[in-house]
Length: 114
Length: 114
Image 1 (spheres, rainbow over the protein chains, first blue to last red):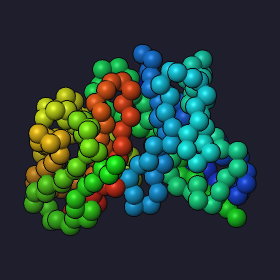
Image 2: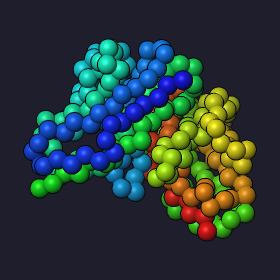
Image 3: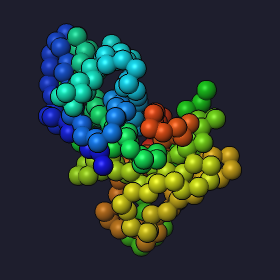
């Protein structure tokens, strides 16, 4: 079975500062990893995905994530935070033989201060 | 291309009633997955349908059921509603490939059980 741990349920940054959201996964087979963002009263929007093609993955809105197998991590970063980045972020893993199932972390709420 | 749509967006029911939620996937997608999102438990996988067949099921009681039609639209039903069923129910569609399980989410149905 696979699992995801997001370190820090709340992260607060100033506008223009670096955003770093942490995600560690557990999987006995090579995983596919995803980051999603959820704005209030909306569904989840895919930011980026790791599918074994490249360890550094670039996504939408200036976000990127690096897959580190040795650390079982897939942290999300953005060089400069914008007010519009305030939302909840979820890391998810797909692996093994569990069709149609993404296993999500508990989520990290990002607050951006002016 | 139109996104995933869910109807209704909001529902209020009383304990003991039943409810049916609907999901229309992105055109060409044959897989629909359902998730329950609550503040306490986070995002939990309910089940997945692919070409009208349930391929996977999460750890929920039998009161939660679903089906998929030949046009890939899906419904989920919850019978004998309990207060704890209050949640945001999200459906996600995908091509059904595995484990590159990139899913696209709808806006969700907010169910309140009184």
